[in-house]
Length: 439
Image (cartoon, rainbow, N blue to C red):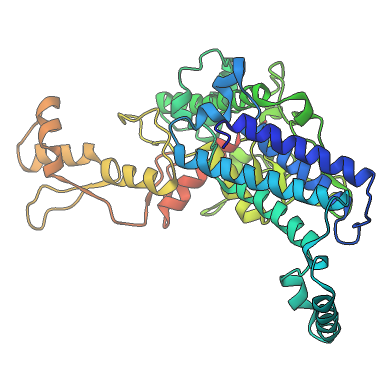
């Protein structure tokens, strides 16, 4: 059994090329059951999967190969190897039928069984067409379905996710510092009364996202091969095509016009994102999904931000995916110890703020008020209890007086507005700032 993914990939590639060659010069005509276009589509989908994951790399490029990435994940490596072996077998079996090296299994029965099969087929024509479509009775359609299913299964294996922002802090060579001035100005313009240090931190977080987008593009370029980068595959019946590795959406480092830094869907809107208030409703718009040559949004495409092939069929799924790529959720309090931490999701971020910042302060005395702000509580202790704390003392006992806020209302410490749904309100601010990083 093949132990290297790169070797199994090479066998699949050769098998596909052999099948394509056989279809170009068929000995038997199976076009009604095996449209050549569908084989070309599946081959190109396979090429993109291999290019995205580094399945082809070995030797000097081993450290960016799929074998290297799965070196300590034997379960996933075995899954990939098993699927590649199945794919090679199904593709080669299909080619042998096209070359008439053997007959489909439905033709190999003896004459008596053939007569019975013909009688059954005659009866079956009167039955519902859906039954025959759900379970193909001929070998060629079964093989084609198996090839499609196997390639789809390769895409489902969680091999590669975009690198988290926190893990890329050492990538100082990815210089996007020329944007930092504009990113900070954007935050200051959006929240005019914000503490300068907090505004700078939020602006730097936008710049960090730009660095990550650049890192992903550079990493993708190192994985691409010339054979993969030149492939095209049709995703719709109306000549809808995707060009893998297309970098037309990547912004140039020389573009410093601040208006060009807005995402397309925002830059073209009637009002700027910095002033898009509608009561408590904050608009969060993401650029549209990539479109094909026919003008329709694609369902299967390479995301221009994480550069991974995605199967996304709704705008809701697309918006969720883009925000996950950008990791918008960071603490909005200026004195937080996790000042440069990107939380994995909205719930983790708000749990942190609720427990550590959006807390209720109470002196544990009946009929005394609760306080939203730590400074107000300390003032209460000084005036009503004649008690003062130095910084070290208070740090040791503060949890005795603090409880996480369970209120869904609150004051936004970015725009200073009160909101009846504070979690949604602040998270929308964060999402808007994250989207500013998109080219």
